Image 1 (cartoon, rainbow over the protein chains, first blue to last red):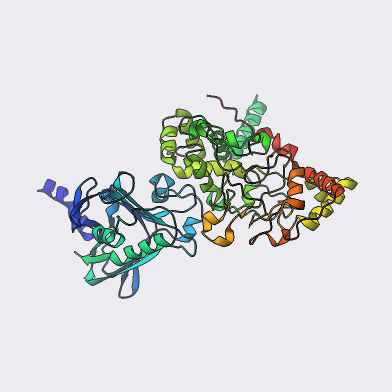
Image 2: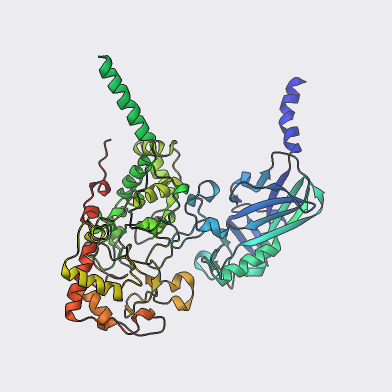
Length: 221
Length: 337
């Protein structure tokens, strides 16, 4: 009996904490790298999907009940632990606010470690600045080499600041929430056939980032 | 015997105190405040030493053939002479002349077009460029982590042997921040330790009249971007800062370089088109192409007689800092395995 208690205790404790998890989906299924997805009557693949969120705030009745102390977090489809944020305590909330991307102050303040370390593959090298959002994959209708699409969205300097503030209101108060980003809808809006590669700051990076902003949805669970 | 032990203890304490003391960045008295935020990367002798070893180690390039010093040689004030365009890995020719490295703590943008906004991040550009080092910062960390020598050096520098992109870049910054050039004859004159010759003085007056608004003393640059009217080299079609800002008004603008150490850091201009200072002056006297965007200071060109040019060059040569260029502290590191 005691052994059983010890075995279950961590799960019980875990369930008490508040949690935000990300569901990065394609046709409502959680995306898996290398898996094929049906998209407008053709098969597409996702090879890489990661993005920064920063200044995460959890809000209840218009009051901030949690302010993230980390300068930014990298949400990476290939790093499962990055897909959920576990808070140390149980907090009720009805709204989540965060920036999609890294703010301009961090972008001009030199080298950072952790999720912001340039080894994470999210820093441009030929020109300073973080890549806020990275999506790569293949679509047979892309005219690019190997039918690849590559969206590296970023840019912090005016007039091409691509940082987006995302504000997600829950339908009811909750201690746990799932933030969904349907990548199929993003591809539909972008149309890889017409623009398969955006890899530098500029007006198109800003436009695509604004599209992403509209696609985030939240659900309590 | 007791006396010997006592002296030994005092020495030991003194050495320990020294090794724990952070390196103090000495601002030359006649320089403005440095722009680099040292609080985010406090200088420490062990980190500076690590940065120096990295700077001179070709391990930073894909095939271990090119180090930072390949294009930034200490004897050339950390510039690259002999070539108009610097060359990198597999003898590939780049498309600009490697700039000299000194007084970097007073600069907030880097590269000829200002594409890099912080000294810490600058090294990523040459490391990743296919024509320069063709390497990747993650792979560098992997290579360094496989070396006992580096594990030990990172441990001494950062207190742990975890090698990260952040620590590699910060170490490289620290070494480069120590590259301060402030001991030229000009500096001695400013500090009232010596005086200019009559010719140098005449040259200094000409400098103040015609050059100082952009090549502002005592750093000899305001580190802004300007179009100095160089006819475009159609083999390169380099439009400079416009590529970074995507603003047409920045077409053909390049970062204004410091005039210190000119004797060591030839050739001149972003594409190294001029080998001699006299060619540079001739450009400003009669070579400027008048076009929209040209620096307003240069609209009427710079009127200099032959004597003026000689005098001005005499002054410019007082900006050479022999102590800096031949400072053994900055040279190839001695390393005991």
